Image (cartoon, rainbow, N blue to C red; front, top):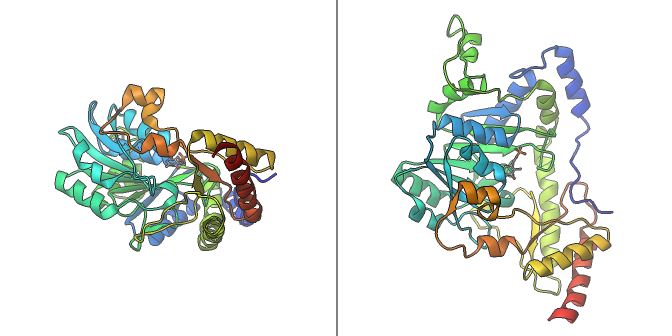
Length: 378
Ligand SMILES: *Cc1c(COP(=O)(O)O)cnc(C)c1O
């Protein structure tokens, strides 16, 4: 059986976790949390990184920081994970969905301006598969309208746009360290704050709305409740596990990119007319995931079944949020849906993780499917 995902282990996780236990401080903002945060600021060139229990929590922290009011609007793609929208809906804001580009599956930067109204507060972009959105155009639009830009960079550790790490370009960037991502700690995440003005308030919100962190630094003589807040800190055991992974990031990214390239070249030179992912020249991806596009959803379902019979797990990705019950209740789609529904219905993800050895067999099985399916259907 070829699994769809196998979470990677470097082998040093238990030693790091043992170290954390020996320190007898397993709550938030401890030794490993600080090491991970420093490493993330160095990696991304962002002034501030805060570990969070998940990317979902990082997005919720952003929504709290923006002091959104009911009816405020947040522009985003519909082809994304639910947390991109949920975080803002929790504050009473309305997700305004715009169409994606068919080549990268990312938000179409040309369509954002037409979706802006008096109520628009932020643009949330999601870099699908670790392939960058057109950030220059997006930042220019945001500047013209004085909007905040949030990068949902959940899939983007080790990925860049014009040499800049994803998540460090907008006002905020969020990472996921869920076990399905390139590096992980089971459940985990981080928030990059690229506007220093927001850092103090983020520290307060994350510490239950108190200025405890200023107190610990000796800046105030006691701490108290000063803002709306929550507990958005991971414990040290998770941070220690993540540290073990972070130290191996370059090797993990390189291995994933090699496998991605094996798929790409294998399909590019094989018979059949599979549409392959596009990576613009401005983007350097991190081998987060590999996908093919089938002709339609029917062909995709048949291919999933064919691969399953051959012992290979494959899966599709997001059901567009504006077609889901909660998306219809809380959000709205602006402009025509030329690509979101059509392209997402035919996208098929193939297994990709550092220990994968079956790329040649997977390509072979897809080719075999092409021969049979084409004989029957075309
Ligand atoms: C994985 C993912 C998330 C959620 O990450 P969690 O850490 O599980 O909360 C959010 N957005 C995108 C685009 C993702 O891929």
